[in-house]
Image (cartoon, rainbow, N blue to C red; front, side, top):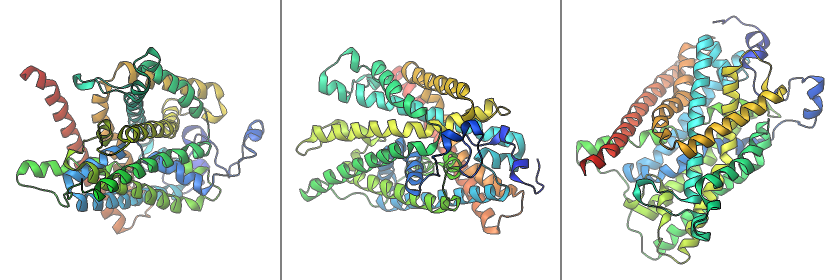
Length: 461
């Protein structure tokens, strides 16, 4: 590991750890100049929308259930604390990046831990993002085409509108979605090119919040909603364990670290990254708090682990079916627009893992196209033909997410290769590692218990 001071170009050669695209400040080769001469750097709002879209994915639907476990007061406090902790981990990551001129998360890991550190980070991002995108595609298929999991068929939106046909079956719907939505958006080489779709994605998340809040308020006025649980009930030891099962959902609710550097590299003013992170976390915290509050207020103790499933029945108000469909369709489209942001980081890190000594991916159209096509094909095939693959990703994904968000930034801080960490930074780093490890152990144990219990249930019947 090299720790001597020196220019960033010496520390991080372009071939091994450069970002997917040149930063706005760097010169580009003459044959690429035409492609970039109109790009004057990403705007503040565009960067906020891109980072917010990275944060708000499918996890938003699990948050109301955490209120059922923790109670409204501790649950909402935990959402805010998780945002502050995420902000602290990103601040540590960017501080060490600035110290050495690291253009990527992998580069700053490489500076602290050498070749294996960079590779470990890239593997975690690939595992996490592949798993997340397979789940997104499965959810989109469930919402639009229905699902028969658990032996009972839940009709999809398209089935409800048009009946059952070959063209609204899962395979065809996901094929059209992949070709018509994912492929065009995955072909953009700059993160900033996705800022408009990210804005729509965030708007659709707000639509879900507004509809949920509106329904809850109407039912509250009518006296159809009982007083929600403000604090957890812990009558026995099993109840105490149940409280810990909410921790992994909250700890991983703001994972976005793998896209911070790509967004930072394209900014007009690189100093804007800190307020961009703050604004994004504030926006997402607001969405999370309102979703959790009104989702739990609306469904109470009937809140399911995925609150979207609660919108599969009569809500007890006029136009219930229309509102159900509006929630489900807006959520499916939201995930379609989150997909390319997660895909961008996946392609970048997989390329660094497989072709660390090759020229930048942005200047090799063949490699860019082949990698994009192969990744989309793998995700499509997995979501359609290996639905049980998520059982494996529940274990690896939980581990990868906490490593990316907390363990790696904390480890860099404790390693402190350039002696810039303060005492408080190291105390915070230890806390992050303890929290992340605890969260991961609880998540893995809970997932293992639910999977094996589910598999053993039929044999006991």
